[in-house]
Image (tube, rainbow, N blue to C red; front, side, top):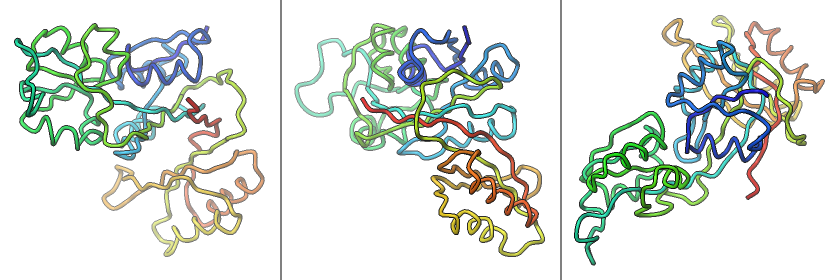
Length: 288
């Protein structure tokens, strides 16, 4: 049975992966750190890794994208989009919650993953403005630590599954800014997984422009535009080799087997751009 590394247990990574890949089709190996997910997949300790790379509220998780580009030669094998409902966990203070005013005034520390505050700014500003935020390795780890503390002044923000796993009450449900908060996950690995068929295929490439070609970015975009190839994302990131040098991370609707897409990539290379294929893979959307 193929092994899949992910943040866990009790995380959104775990819940989303089991939703799309099934609970029994793979052996899931939980890690506390996302770096361990990368390195275990890169070393062959596991067959695949699951990486969260983008969120509705915060955009790209730049650190994870950089790891994918610079640190690990792991092709993208699939992607899926999964809803993220954040919940506040903790223990009521002795005497119970106050009948009026701020019901969470007793909380002095909030534990969670570092991207969470950007997704819950409205709730945190209204109810947790006086609390310190302490980043931990995952949302589930924050819930675990809050549960272990048994301290009403320490709370955590994370998935409902983590609360059940670590036996800690939910103080407030769905505290994210928007109800349609979604996260995009990538399945990366050197092998080819057996997955459910889907009509939706995407391709991700990295394009590094030639330094001596004025208008090169316009030429790159034109290669897609006149062929009516849809780009779902384009993001510039530093190459980390020279100040002012950037590559372009581009997500494309369509398969690398498409003649139009192959021709577009060849045209880009003709002008001197370097193109690296990160993957051509099935894309899955959450349907409830």
